[in-house]
Length: 412
Ligand SMILES: [Zn+2]
Image 1 (spheres, rainbow, N blue to C red):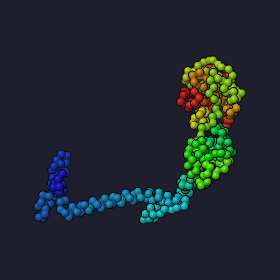
Image 2 (image 1 turned 30 degrees about the vertical axis):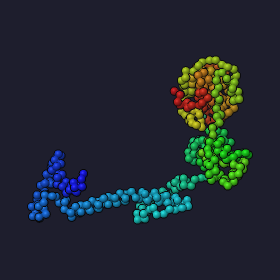
Image 3 (image 1 turned 180 degrees about the vertical axis):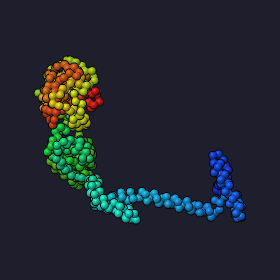
Image 4 (image 1 turned 135 degrees about the horizontal axis):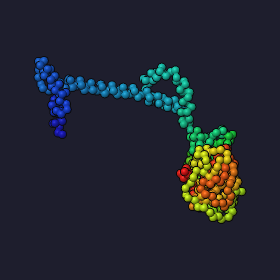
């Protein structure tokens, strides 16, 4: 578009557009044309021109002004609609900050504040009393390890969630009590609650920050920069930063493998490998049925009672009544049958001969012995609560080539 057409278009287009837009707008353009001659008959010399009233500079300025005022008014309405929310939020943030020590002022426009209190005055006490304790916690990160006393009905996941931690952190923070076994959680137990996810470590003679960081898959900086460890950063002659043996330190972001107290992979070729595991171990090399590679639900009750499968519990806890039938999930040979020394009580392990084993723990009774062949769905014992168990349930594990996958992915 040239400079000339650009300049002329504002003048000509309002006139040309009504007749030009002939299509659907015929009726409206007609009414405009009818009114326009009426105006021109008034005798005013200005009206003689066929050009519409919008072309007159005074009217145009007026219309433009009106548009500006309208836009400004709309903006004002929008601002008024949304600004109280913004002010409330910044007001709350300022309140929280002031409690934390610094109170940045000036973000809120004081002109709107007086309208708020009269409206909410009656309820403001009730609201603030409930919301303050919750909203203030994240503003002041905890740096100390605190204690929590386990109550009846608690489980690892609930406790972890209440403190915003991973369930792993509860186990890592309490190895002496829980020994990586969520089943050992019991009412009255005093747990260490770490301030953030990671491991808890008691310093030993000869340890260095670098060595400990490597052991728990994290960096020396994370250990050193964590203020709760009270480390003297200037004391770095020997890599211990003055940490005395016996001192407990938090290893933020640290992790380590869990100790698995469950039965090891016991195959029909090496049942004696489980000799250390308890009195139920078997001795010889066995032959017998090979499994189908499909697995039936191992008891009559289909509810989960206690722990689902997770990184800290690679098994299912299935509910039921004392003595409920326990079924062989697939065909195979019994390679462990009897008492276990690692909290699993009366235990049966079946080797299915195809890389799979299944384990049935806490049984009240055992109906099959070492080396016995069993068919899929055959009753092998009764549901119980022996070993580390707080009530009747079946702790069921599936083992495949040494790993323990989620039974829910395989059972039907
Ligand atoms: Zn379990």
